[in-house]
Length: 415
Ligand SMILES: Nc1nc2c(c(=O)[nH]1)N[C@H]1C(S)=C(S)[C@@H](COP(=O)(O)O)O[C@H]1N2
Ligand SMILES: [Mo]
Image (cartoon, rainbow, N blue to C red; front, side, top):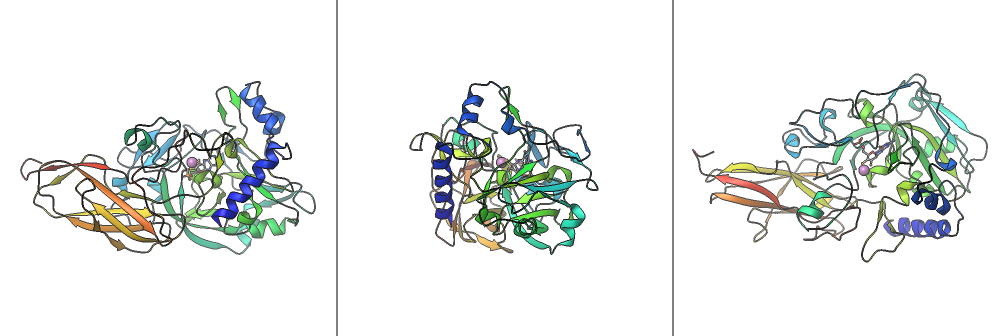
């Protein structure tokens, strides 16, 4: 599967280099780099939905005990996931916004499916139309490709650009919606379709004075027809504004940018599609990577403790360490934890189900006072494990190395 995706991306790249692609051409990219301004191809039709600007980039409250705010984004504090169960409650699910959360009227919202990959003309669906179709429920993670990015710098001394996430740019929820395959078939999907590109209704993303247009990223038709949902419910509630209300795309196992929020249009094409989100960003650039960047879609293996950095423990007392590990390539088979900076390792005990991620626990009785480092290393059923060092790329994606989590041990009475 991973190799199929890679060869699809490579094929798409070759076609793009030949200029044989729709949506975002190499010339467009050139124009962009020259900062001449927005090419007409970036500007989508203004959707006929009621939309009001939100007060800030994020609508829900962002209390400091639940979130760390990073620009237009908010990362979940791992200490806020202790004792909350398998799913991340909506009040603490991380938010990654390129611009700001739009407020969309679900009554007038429509999804337009359009493009050369349909047998006929555009087809539009209301929310009620989608809710009448058979629904499906899945427990799945959404994780930003840049989750853990800051550790390239703090742990490996490397320069990267982008939001300096620690490990809180992931959440697991129960999503309910309709299969994208269902909607595409109803819209008259042609056998000639190759790419499917959902487009967000949030404001255009402008960076460095250049308008990149609405947030969008193509999926190969095979993935679109596989396990992708158009989700309208999250943990049994209507999708909240910050997470894509009324409807978002949910692409299991793939980097968060694939899961387009506030989807208003889906372009289905008989030619490969391109957007800035699969050409300039969300590719691996740097030493050992091709000059045009290596495409990637799937997530890697990671682990985190349900603790703040610098958490304090009492020497001589037994503490329960808890955390979570996850992989896009299958269930977690083994979690090893070190409480002595990596010198010795013990197996942690899995807790609860393994959908989206695996919770785990192990007891620790620290003996000596002073700073300590906790490490967790997961291995999935396919044998993918976390290395000591993540392979550097300039945009800081896919940090999979074991994170060294600093804590303090104090003697009783001194805490
Ligand atoms: N329309 C739109 N969709 C989007 C984004 C965005 O800014 N606009 N951000 C993407 C990124 S980079 C991530 S990681 C996920 C985050 O989903 P969440 O905010 O629900 O946690 O949404 C993706 N979908
Ligand atoms: Mo992301």
